[in-house]
Image 1: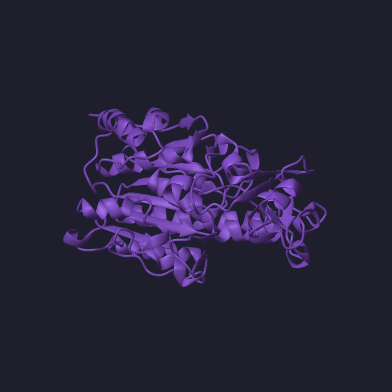
Image 2: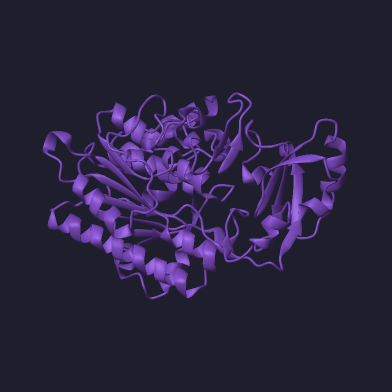
Length: 404
């Protein structure tokens, strides 16, 4: 933790000299478009997003943290910590300190603060600083992290359409002055769902991109009609790459039967050795493999910044982009469309970043940066000191207007 404290003083100095904003005024709106690759802006169906990118700042690409999946990266964006540090190391997890419970999407575990308490997201710190926060479906908002939830945060409802989500957020901006929100967050999953089902190049995915762009247009019109000049930060958590049933690695054909307990599979596979079978499993996996690499958790390459958290299983295999690791016939039969979770440096895993509003210069194109850097930016825009993190605002300073 001491290295984070050392970094904090430098981050605070840069933030305070770069930003001139009042806490909660103008409001800060953070939007996630799950699974949105930056090149989707070139499909001719995103007039609103392209207009925002021209009016403010955008990144050539934003590099997600590893693993390049939804929950770990959404929590990274709002904490500035890598998954190994904030504890959301996967969409499916076990923890010896939380016995008998598996963390998994769509279960009550997502509301249990014990899975989230290794870090503190923007909205918790903002609430404690007196800035009311409203969060629509951002992962983590359903839990009372460190005992705090946003002032407004309905439970996830996947049936709520994109336009209704935009309207809901706008309605929250109609609060009386004493109840107004300074930080708001909004989540769209349409592009990710289409990319998984049909693949990133499919017409259906382009249609989903267009749909979310229309919802962004609805949000912009609503802000304009209310005379609200908000700072708007639009991100995605990861990209998407095509997969097929012809590019499947069968783990059950490589590892001896009974030598492991499968935890998760897909672009990567995580497993625990069966007691007494660790050497046998290691002998099978820790040798050159076609289209994937395997490691003990301690041997995962340092550049991935992954494998030190207790929640990461003992053995880990990462497939080449476009390949899929399956433990059984059922998983292999479901391989279609698109996937993410690959090496976070793979081009198809790149994420979106657009920022526009009174704090940002127009027409800025930033080089590739890591998504941990979004957190100190958000905290600076709120006028609240950031907590220690893995991020730095340095990469984003060229996008910010100078202090007046």
